[in-house]
Length: 169
Ligand code: 2AM
Image (cartoon, rainbow, N blue to C red; front, side, top):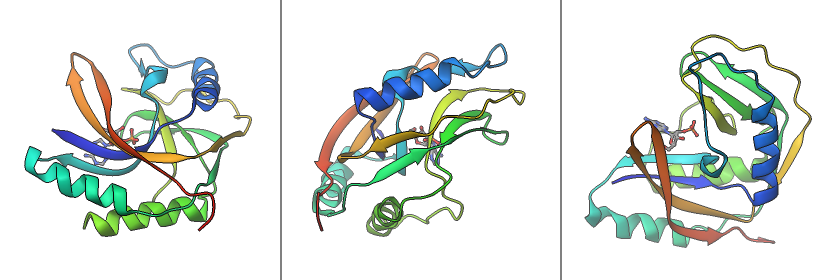
């Protein structure tokens, strides 16, 4: 199974992101990500055997990290991956620490240029004309381990488990 750790937006944040996506003016053949699929990937684990699940759940369950506020304030076209994302120009320090802790515990190589983002559209072959984005504030309260299954053209995501982020540390 294919797994990843992520933050999933609350309903209000999801609706605000959908509002941003609706105004993108994507080139034809781009694929808008369905709003229920919006997420912020913290760590991509990839294909694992069923026997590895217990240790991933133990890592998630043992992690103690604070809540944070992420301000998404830019839409960007990333040509290399052919996606349009809503991105946070400032990385909240708590989110950076959560991301670092997960990569450390999973023994994954952290990618150098982390940008907190939610992918809004895929298969975007040409640069769209992007409007300025009114800042959108997402207050995180939990993180989770999710499973990705590709059925047809769209990925389907299911929650494996979630853990609270803490009020005070
Ligand atoms: P992104 O869209 O958040 O940038 C689940 O598959 C998520 O994991 C995707 O939404 C994608 O991130 C990320 N992902 C998929 N394949 C990946 C890979 N090979 N390396 C790193 N992240 C990947």
